Length: 276
Image 1 (spheres, one colour):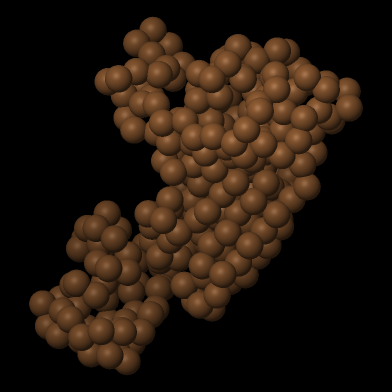
Image 2: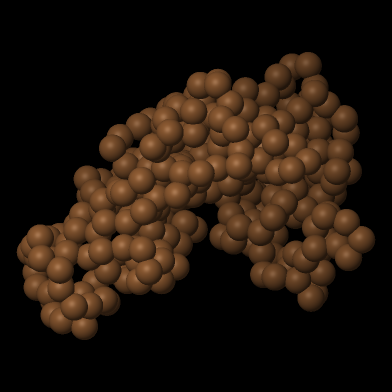
C-alpha cells in the first residue's frame, strides 16, 4: 500500500540531509529503491538545497503483510492522537510475539488500528511486567522520538522483598548468561544504572519507585536482586512466588514533536499489597 509522509523544512540544507534527520538512515535506504521524494510537489534531486518553509512529501510502499494473525481483543488505550498511542500492557503478556508464544499486545494493536495501520512500539516491557507503552502510528513519528531513551521518560513501581531503609543507586554492569537467557552482574557486561526511591513499607516488604538511566534487558530485576531485594513474584531472579511479578511502568512522559508540548501519563499501582 502506498503511504505518504509530509513535513516542513525548518533549516536550509540538502534534501538528503533534511530527510535523513527526519526519518533516519534505515528508512532512508529503503526509499532509494521503493520511494519518491517531492519538494513543493516537484521531484527534486537529493543533493539540491531545500529552504525554510519548503514542503517535503515522501511516498513509499508500506508492507502490511504480517505473519502474525491479529488478536481480536481491544488494547487498553490511555491516550491517542493522530500520531501516537499510549496503552496499558497487562502482566504476563508479551509485547511482541515469538514462535514459541504467538500471542502479544502487538497483535491487539494491529487489530485496533486496522489492516492499513502502522504499529511501531517504542518502549517494550518484559512479558511479566505491566504498565504503560508508547506506540507510533507512522514511521516519521517513530523516528522523531528516536533515540527513545532521550525522548520518553518512565518510572516504575517495584514491590520488593525485605525492608529497604533509604533511597539509592545501583551502578553494575549487566551481561547475558552463557547458559541461558538470564542476565547477570558482570564486569564484562554493559553499563547499567538504576535509581530507586523508598515509597513505603508494607509488612516486611518495600514499595520502590524506580527510574533507569540505561535500558538493559531485565535491568531492574537483576539490579534489585543484586542488593538482596528481589521483586515479589520474580521467581526467575529469586523472588518469592506470587500470582504476578510486582513490577509496573506506572509513569510515562514525552515531548510531542508536533504539538510542541509535554505529555505526562500516570496510573495507580494495581498490586494487591494486603494479600502478599
